[in-house]
Length: 316
Image 1: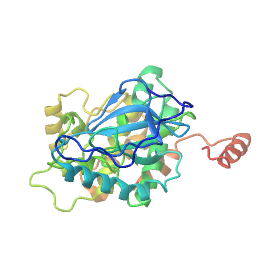
Image 2: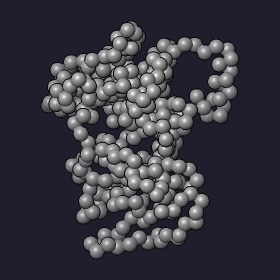
Image 3: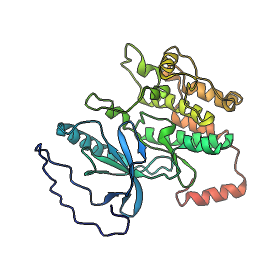
Image 4: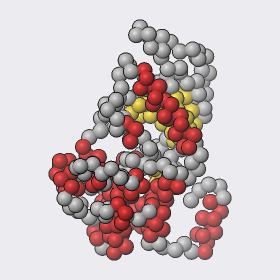
């Protein structure tokens, strides 16, 4: 496997025709995998470390449909390319950057995104046990990133700790947005477990189905559960099996809260508001971000000057 800085062989743009008569995807000359196996296994993708030009990136190789359905591959590729028009406009420090859609790594296309060597936020919390103040700051950053996505009309659809990462500046960054809803389609198989329902708003799993779902409010419910996860280091309903958690959600039974939330009236009120059974009663992501920011200590004069200086260079 080639490494950064090594010359790359020329790759044809005509593709290859397999024994089935299906044209294989054209390899992407700008993107290459690192010489190592995938390091994560998502609901709908295998995740590899790779290189885009001179940048270390993640190559998220989608899977879930067999090779006798080329029309599904074409449909997914077109969908991702349309979404990429919006995604490439994102310039928020708490939203993962998507560089491009790449072909040639498998039957389905791949997304090329930022690489976060620190890993996801929950694994970091379990390993380092950060202060309550730091957890509030991260929750605030997640809410701020979510508000930014919503300002573009983009809904995450699968917000949880596993999809939030820490960058080199120790900031929380939302990834894997606007993907899950597309793959929740009968044409795709999935490795998704029932465990992810722990972050799911009750109206999504209601029977009969709610015909008037509000995607932003569904994201806010998931944010509330992600907040719980950040403060406890555990998934919602961690004391229950997946099946019992589904029934608890259906009964409007609240999950067990850590003391860091129950002993802070503002945090407890925000969690309750975000996970309100009535979607219209949930706050906006921007409102949640402001509430959390107000819980952080006000910076001193010197710190404010430093923060203003750093903001000029894209840091926050």
